[in-house]
Length: 83
Length: 83
Length: 152
Length: 152
Image 1 (spheres, each protein chain N blue to C red):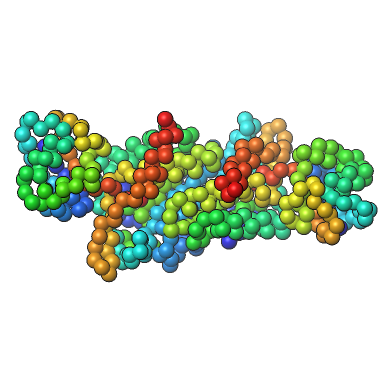
Image 2: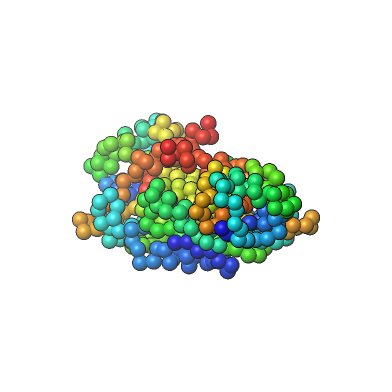
């Protein structure tokens, strides 16, 4: 499963992109975030306030209760500020 | 007093512009229209339905009860259709 | 700024003229009105735009000033063509520039709604069934009246 | 049509590309967003636009399709720049073309409101106090939510 990070989430995690194999029992985005936070201080800092985090599953905006089974690409980022 | 006509009002009256000296007792635009209608068939046709007529007194939109004393230029035209 | 002219306008050049060298503008909205080949089910071969010289310029200036009174605008422009036009030709250009998009959008809509009901222009369309003066649309009156309510 | 690009865009040329040879378009609205030298009281020397390649294009296409579903549009275009920009530079261009001005105006406002809250771009501003990621504005969320209500 490919995980992408953008903006200050990327800076705090320290990488832009990584391939991970999360435990098969992780059901949704919330569970994935919990597992990611256990991987180090950068992740802990990035996901400290989940209200500031947005997620896209396979390049489509998603909610935190979206299932992650079968997803190929999950991205985490702050609220967008283009335009 | 200069009177101007535009669009189909001009076509019905038959002239674009004329200098007139209306009777001094004409108080407002409504009275002026009544006097103009007495001047011939073209005027009669142009002002047949006053609801279709708009007026500007000295190049400013006005109502039919606007006084005409002192006005230098009064224009009659249908609702505008620019833009 | 306002202009009444027979010749066409260049939208890109007009925007550049308003914004060039400025760094306080965050949003530019333009509206361009064009001659369509069909209006109200009748086909249009050409169009003639009559106007009231003198009052037209004064009225456009009044409308522009009113927009600047209601919204925070850094710059604005109204250009309206007169004379003979063909389908596809430009008729009118409105540009509004502001720090924020809300002001630019609202002011541009207001300028067009007011121009449509207050600026002394009259369109005459020529088609296969002859010439006809374009009739004012009730929807344009309604659109303009909405701004009166908001200011009340 | 949608495009994501580093280079600048030419608004006049983009309008011409959408409308050239067509006689069924009566109204063209453009919105251009530019870099300002001040945002939220902080001065801006330059700006860097990060985006999510792949999702950006998909999201812009979704937003554009939604606009065509809601309004009668003859053509539309969204161009968004990425990379490093300076005050006065263009950031984003939205063009909507319709038979009538109401559709063109509403669709352009909708495209910008949705783009501002859904298209995955992030601005980083550099100024005298260092770099900072631009924070999302609550007013942009509110603007986007207004369209949800209308469709309900």
